Length: 393
Image 1 (tube, one colour):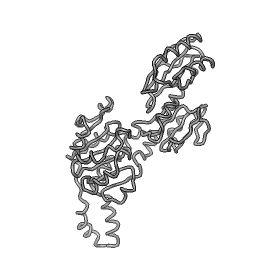
Image 2: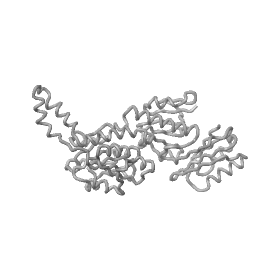
Image 3: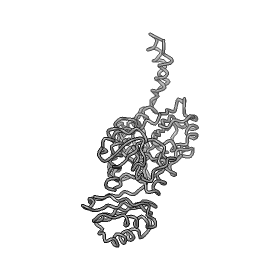
């Protein structure tokens, strides 16, 4: 019986994919095998030694200490693309809101025209000139990051008649194939900053991307640029952005990350982190996260991990055999050590997959026959081995 702890409310559509006869799922659970999380902060959370994996029902993993968990052999999964359509739709709305000041127009109507009765139509005609905004057609949208979300945003903007330029130094083949052929790829961020009328950001927050929208990058942008950030709050230096808004350099900013300094500014629209807040996205993320955990716990395979390498196998665990799942430090000679120990135990190795990611590696070894406690201990005692988990067929 696998134990799954939920740290946030997770869609029942996803949780229903855990077989009830072999999984226990609860928010209060001791010694869980795995954890399902959305937004809960895990940085100060003490994990049970029994915890083998964490799955984030969403794309970002800033709330999870991924590197620390990797060193403990805990695999962290995310669900890339599961909420892409929800975020894409909100980005398109944000671009429109940055262009046409309908929120301020609505506030004006509700306050200035209240109680005016038959005068409303005339007053509205006189007042509407305060809320003029440009059309999107023919304008240039710069998309920073062309993953699942960025690619969808780019394609939709093309359909709206915009010129789209994109930047992504890590553009995957899958993402490239999904892009409309009219999207132009630029080789540097300056190619976005100097040419775009609208800029939307779709990259993770890392040491390299933190504060990428700052005084220096804002300086080379077009006057009147409109900036959309529904990715991560830390990608923008708020003080620099606010100064650019107040000077008129930036015509509008829409962010999913409210900040005290941004509130009640007519040129800034703050949203309460609504990017993936649709029932469809929550269901999609939960379904994917549950599948990732089940695949890992039941078969050892790793797909969509942010701190471990991708490791899969087309072969099933040998009948009556054992699959050994061994996270270890990425140092030479580990496989030789493992096969020597298994050979000394008179166990035949049916298959080996070993992949690395930075300092961490993960071996998945199929063995004919059941691996006993003494052999498991010998494997675990190897220098650089983090843990050993047997899965018996």
